[in-house]
Image (cartoon, rainbow, N blue to C red; front, side, top):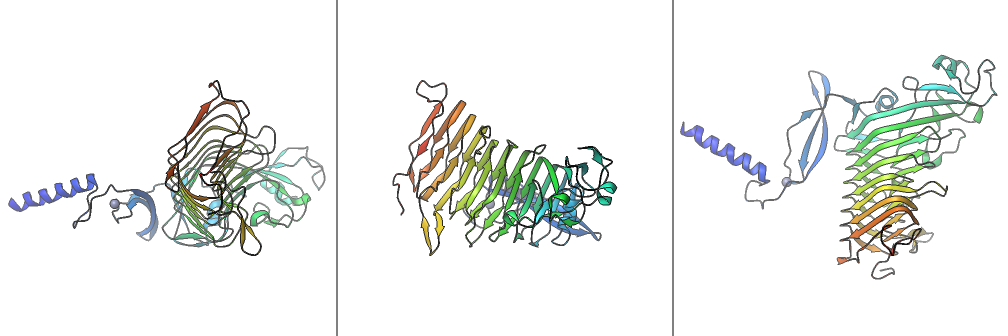
Length: 424
Ligand SMILES: [Zn+2]
């Protein structure tokens, strides 16, 4: 009886400590900050994936089985991604990965003849739907391949490291030159695409795709998404708790959302770390972007760039939130010989906007040699609010306005400088 009472007391104490985040052995109490982790275990000679959360103090929660998991390793990962992954969690086992592509494939795509009448398909009209067999029997014809990624999570066990990028390239693929290291391979016909006659157009649509707990180490190790053909879309892309480190100068962002159209909606970048790289986060023509609680250091250009595009209709729009980020050493572009050009590098760069609400708050910045924030022309229904941002520990002037204010000038830009606009 007495023993049970003591046990119950200990248990209640443990539960209370857990609830209030108290740690044992006289450690000062703190509120646990949990991040999500993943682990693969072999149970009854079958690999199963689990998720749990962990605080830096070592406190972990129990494992929860991921029912819809697909386990992959460096050898099998590309094959897994070329198969059906919709509504699944792809769990990458600890290891070193090269380049992975999100691309069309034989088993996941539909096929259409390109509106090009050359080649050996005289019996078909422009744009006709064709079968996989037809594609394989007529290899010297360009095709459109359609693929949709829907509700896909790509996550890593602790210790997953990429030496090359995760790429999605929805653009006309041909030729032997590689843009940003993109391997121009046609997974459907299993050929390289040396000429336009056997080229292909991967039309890729995304609805809820996320990347979590992955490390990227090296000059070309990035998450790199590019949408440049019509009938593509990208709605709901999240990058969370990923690290990007390089010691070699490059000309690309660690997290790169490029596009020639207004393709992106709902981008979230959260709890990530960038060290080195040209830029930290780069988005093009996006509607609704949140960049929250990231650490970005030693970029040679803008740390966070929410850009528009030169095309007249490619604006930033929706709600843009940049908060709780730490940005240090926006060091400028590298000049041969070891110096850096300090002009034109910003902590935050926002492009031309229309019908936008911009919220920038609680960011800490140090060593940014140019403006700490610049926007392009603001048109349509606009509001912006910059508050509680710090430069080297000094609170920056706040600024807010909306297109309903009397003094708001349509088409104007916002430029806020550092207190000391100079190299230091
Ligand atoms: Zn803790």
